[in-house]
Image (cartoon, rainbow, N blue to C red):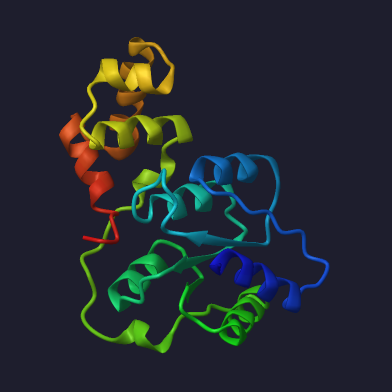
Amino acid sequence: MCVAALGMAARQVEPDAVIEQVGTISDATGLAQGRKFDLILLDLGLPDVQGLAGLLMLRRLQPDATIAIVTSSDEPAMMRRAAREGAKGFIPKSEPMSAMVTAITTLLSGETSFPSEMLEGADPVEVPSLIGELSPAQFRVLRAAADGSQNKQIAYELGIAETTVKTHFAQIFKKLHVTNRTQAILALQALDVTA
């Protein structure tokens, strides 16, 4: 329902816009690697991503795109965290169509669009943005590890060799500046917006 509303809102703002819709962060990163986008509306509820990791990955792949978060949550702390990690806007799914149109118009004009509630409450602890440096394959390996899978299971589930999993972990540790699997998983969990 929200996807359709956002699409209609975008068409009201920019009738000739080319709109792409995907259901996973893997599909989103695949599109982001092949094309340039002006505006990306990212749902935090995608099934294959945790917290703000999708935002970080898309920021790395589309540094010039305006990225706004679309979510069912309206927590001010989450809005501030998303802004700190590079989001230019935050559109709650509960917003009426007119508010979505206003937000998209504002974002496409180069300005930020956050609800006024964003300023309520104390700031959460700063979160490092290093997860965004991981490749999609490295992210899938780390996410599987965070779900409790061992290397052999990860290899089987992702259709890769166990040595490839170990190679991915070596690169993950290097990119996240950690020394072990537990620290890497904690870095991923730190981005969980439901925490």
